[in-house]
Structure formats: C-alpha cells, structure tokens
Length: 419
Image 1: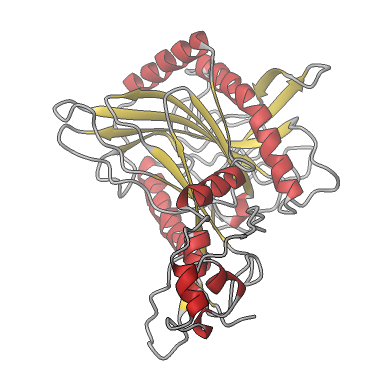
Image 2: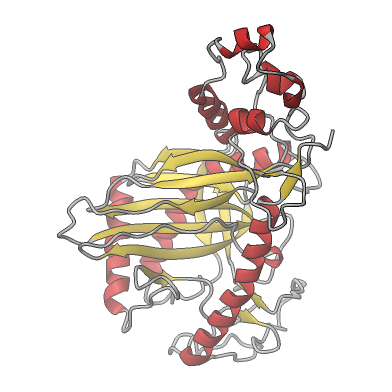
C-alpha cells in the first residue's frame, strides 16, 4: 500500500530539520545553530501525526450507524432463537471460552479430496487448489435506477446455518448486508484507486457477489477481561477476500473498545526519511526500532505503521479492505460483578472478479436432516461433527502459519542507510 500520508515537514526544529532533511549524525551539540534549533518548539506534534493518520485511514475504513431499529430487534430475536436451538455451545478454539461461534466458516469447511463438488451444474465450477477453504454463499444485490439498494437475496445456503429452520434470519442477514453495500462499494473503489484490486475496468457497484458469513459473541465472565485479538488479515489467499463488513448489533455491560488498524510500507521509498534518521522516522511516522537477533547487523526499523483505531459501539456498520491488518482491543466490563457480551454479524466479501468455490457448488455437509437431502445429481458429502472439528483444527493450524508469514512481512526490518 502506498502511504500518501500528506506528509510535508516544514518545521525547522532540531528534531525535524536536523533529522528529516539531513543525516542526523552530521551535527554536534557544540554547533550554535543546532543549539538554537534544540530550543525551538516542534510543529510536528503527535496530535498532527495522529490527525494525518486518521485522514489516511478514513480513505479505507468506512463507518456509519444502522438506523433501523425494527431490523435490529428482529435480528436479535432471531439470533436468540438460534442460540436456544444449539445443543452445544461452540467455543472458538483457543479463546479460553470467551468467544462463541454461532456461525463460523471454519466448521464443515471445504476439504480437498473429502468434500464432493457438484457435477450437475451448467456453469463452470471454480477450481480450488486449497487443502481447506471457507465456503461463501452467493448473494445478489438488486439496485434502483439511482443505484441505491432495493433488495438483497441469498441464493445459496450459508454454511453452518440451516435455511429451513432460519429463513427469517436469512432475510434479516440479507437486509443488514444491503445496508453495508454502499460501504462495500466505497471499499472496492478505494482498492481500485490504490491499484490493489485487479479488475477489467473501473469497479462496478456490487451486483452478484460471494460472501462468507460469521456470527460470533465475545462473552466476558464477572471479574474477567477479554485480552484482545492478534494482528491479522482475513482468510487465505485462495479465498480471495477483499473486504470485511461488520455489524455490531449488541453490546451489554462492556466498556468502550476498539478495532485497531496497521499497515506496512511498500518499500524503502514509500515514506521520506533521512539517512540513518531513526528518531525522525519514529517522530513523524511512529515506527519503532526492530529488535534484532544479531547485534552485528545494521540497526533497522520495523515496517509497520499504526494507523489508529475505530471505536466499536453498538449499531456500528464498519467496512474495510483486506489490506490492513487489524485486531480487537481489550474488552473490559463496566460492572465487574456482572457478565458482559459483544455480538457481531460479519461479512467477508470475495473479490467480485475472482469467483471461488461456494455453497452453490457443494452440498451441505452437516449431519442434520436438512443437510442430508442432497440435490439431484450431487454426491452426498455429509461429514460427522467429530470429523468437522478435526478438519477445523487442521485448517486453523494451516492459517496460523499464513498469519505468521503475514505478520513477519508487516514487521520486517528495513535499514535507513538505503538511500
């Protein structure tokens, strides 16, 4: 990502000019001019840096509130009914029983050479070389003449959400997605403008798209704190996720919390910096020195730029492109003697120009009565819950290394001698 942070340093204090415009090692404390500059107030304040980053972040992160109380109330009631029908609470692996997965794409995922793909469809089926893959549903967006959203339909099943028992919830999920479509349009435009979205032409507004759906609750017991998440992008390369949309539909007894964002420089010329100007880079961009394993190497800076955070309040609709690493902040209780919850409905948008294997191509794998009804011409692929959990564990193990690779890239060191 090219970081056009609107940065022009016109300050002539020692911290800026003697670092930004020149080699920082070329000045002496005995220099009269340097002594004068050391007493000058710095115009490049932390507040201005934060404001620059916030302006940059607003080019890629799009927020507004959902002002549809009837839809919200209906959705909450329908999800509550879904929770009541769950025979077993599915705690997200590794979450210390603080994250409940109501609908999660890692369970009953596509498994290469295990999950049968339909052979009775007229349209060509995307080929997946993934060992494991999240399965998106097929969504259709109907527009009015003025390009506003008229309606959204979900044309194939949402993985791990039986449709027959949850038709009303399907309609509510489609309606929430409809409210997010304008923000997804903005995110696609931002990706196109930054040359991060390969498309045959300027990005059209969403019409037919593939979407991975997730419903998850953070649950904090009395006296506890949710420690927060880890830096990550969404999905694997084979899932082609280009943007994420989140609806924060219910928060109870939790303090304000945030979704934090960071990026990484594209190359050593992505930002201006002086020769060996580590203090200048830290002062103007917030970068920190990378702790190396070998003291014989040149001192390096980490490549990450902490761009800021978005306060995640109830009713928030949030969309951002999948080029920014993000993580959930710590979640604390307002009243430590009572439990607290944070509930979200999440949409992962697949690149509209790169179709992937979806639930239109794979029969349901859940061992329920509905899932066992296989479409005519499709091979049954019912999987036991025990096997599904095993494959989920393997999928998460694979993704751990993908996330580690991403983080190593984001945090890679670079030398300020590279002018």
